Length: 174
Image (tube, rainbow, N blue to C red):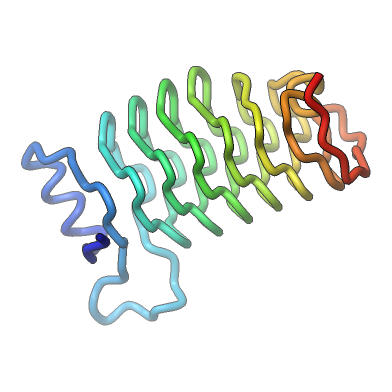
């Protein structure tokens, strides 16, 4: 069950020690145009539980989400440039059209992610499996091309760290 909360309310409650925000839907503050991004730029949200939350079009650039539980979160069209998302749980996360340029994702569970049209340029990424990587961009990312093109990942027009493009579509286990 989703409950609505503004970025300001989330930050205030987090500052008061609350960490469990499972199932929230992040909404715009009153008076802000609905089509604007929701601003959490630079927020420190370590060890926050946002499991199943709806964070579409949220600006989390330079945010620190170390140890966060983001299982099943929708980050569609969100901005996470230069974000620190180490040792976090992003299992089954929706990262479609998300910008993770130069994000630090070391030690983070990205298995079963939907990363269609996501940008990981220059990001530091561990491994992942069973991911949707259609039109994803990994140019200059610190991740092996073997990891991208295997382990049950769906490849289609996916840009590799080298800049080459794997046309696909194909799915390859080994």
